[in-house]
Image (cartoon, rainbow over all chains, first blue to last red; front, side, top):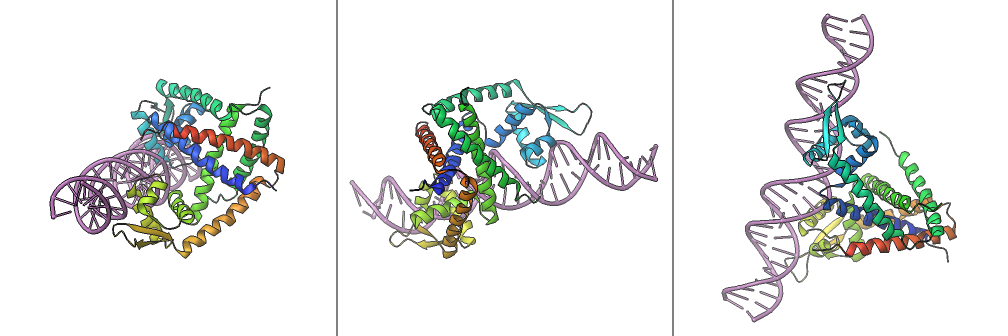
Amino acid sequence: MVPDADGAVDRLFDLAVVLGDLMNRTLAVHGLTAARAEVIWVLHHSGRLTQRELSEVLKCTPRNVTGLVDALQVAGLVVRTPHPTDRRAVLVSLTERGAALVSQWSAERADSTARLFGDTSDSELVAFVTVLDRVLVALRQGDAAPRDR
Amino acid sequence: MVPDADGAVDRLFDLAVVLGDLMNRTLAVHGLTAARAEVIWVLHHSGRLTQRELSEVLKCTPRNVTGLVDALQVAGLVVRTPHPTDRRAVLVSLTERGAALVSQWSAERADSTARLFGDTSDSELVAFVTVLDRVLVALRQGDAAPRDR
DNA sequence: CAACATAGTGAAGTGACTACACGGAATCGA
DNA sequence: TCGATTCCGTGTAGTCACTTCACTATGTTG
């Protein structure tokens, strides 16, 4: 009997749903939403950015960034600074509280890792990640194709 | 060098994001949203349900179901029928167009399967699904714990 | 039959998003 | 140096998913 590849796809979708829920609930505990958390995440990796740059990285409209940054600023996780040379632009960067939140996340990720892969052997893990990477490549590649903007 | 379990978790989250995007874009082509599609999916599996029952399966408020069913009804994918014995309740069921949409999805899933797992051997697939199932179990189990409603 | 529970919906509000229009600032060509 | 153009951010307005609260109409039960 052939292992069910369709079943694997189903499980992948299940995973996406369950993982998405987990993420939303975890973030909600910290008073955050997925969209706002992504802003923080990007800022953590790229340092200070203009809102225009943020909108490109997040693949959303500049208008939307305005709203997200507004909320994060009120929450004290982010600051707007005038751009040194371009008086139209605004630089957004993490506050200390924002940076602290990121390090808290990495601690929580360690918990998740232990919980999800605690009893998975190294060889299983290697095989798993190998296939997973292949799937991700196929997924992103199909991603690029139907782009028509 | 130990295979990176943290990296695996990261990839899982990547997967959730990319897969979610794929789903949203695919549904948008059919003029649907994730929430509305889920209604159709549930109806396909459970047959006709009252809105109250739908709200329980979807884990959302009855009020929300009203809105979703409204939209699907306008789109001609779903019908409201009076409940035979309870005059308060309404039975929601798929129209032919709704059912046709579901079979179209399963065809599309076959495409996805081929694209994502086309060049994955049976043994790899078995190993992959084994670990994936374990992860899903761990995920859902953590799901039940923080429930405090 | 009165008291209570239940099914669905109107009203109002939040969060993420979009398109469109506008004001101020940068930039480029003449 | 003066327009014309382009670009940054934001106000306005609208969609979609979702919630809570209040209310009607209907069942159920003592």
